[in-house]
Image 1: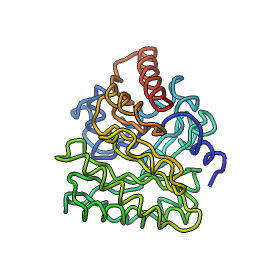
Image 2: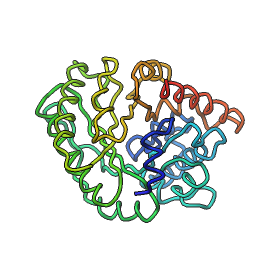
Image 3: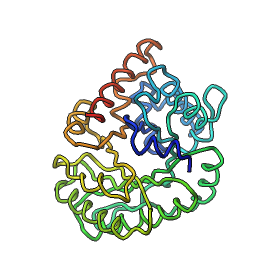
Image 4: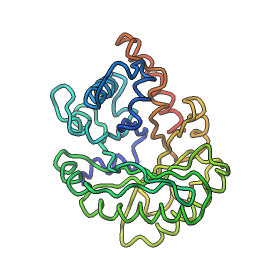
Length: 295
């Protein structure tokens, strides 16, 4: 593991940009960007278009390590280039932004109020490529819809099982058990998740450390015990469907929690904007998210 990147992740001010939309979420991201589904007729063309959007964001003068601590990439983005350089190398060497890759293969069907991750059948080969390309860590997402203790425990167990495999390869796992902001009882789901994560972290061997990516909590500073836990390198928050303004308002009230936003980061960006307009809007979004992350 790159120690300079680890030190940055542990303490540098900033936030994580989530640019890891998959095949399922890319059409919505492109539509918000101003590209309708009739603009492409294959997955290949869709992924080309989403890569151009991501490349435009990461190449923007507003996007730099001064405020953006790290970026979560989709697997295909990791395998592509920006300005003729491997994406991970471009991010770290040119922008001083730590590169991370999404490794999960989507969600299984709902059971006990949650969606576990589908089995990661290609994890080993993906981790090999990630190490080769200089990736710092990984991210994997589960989804909690209802405050079901059995379901939440199953999610945490699965996440940590994969996290230990990732740690063995010298990469930092980001565990993301997202709680739906539309859950019928989100505060209870938040608390059940906090208890399950705390117990699992208390059991972690030696000097093991992971990162956590959690939905903005319903109760301010709920995740303070996780932020201060010795087995946690850093806790980051996802916006989960809240607007940029709402996300930043909630985040600013949670001490020590930093952003890892996707939709909120790209809010208001369109393919039709001039480079100056695009950079100004992206810069404004980054400023707001950064300010909320360091408050």
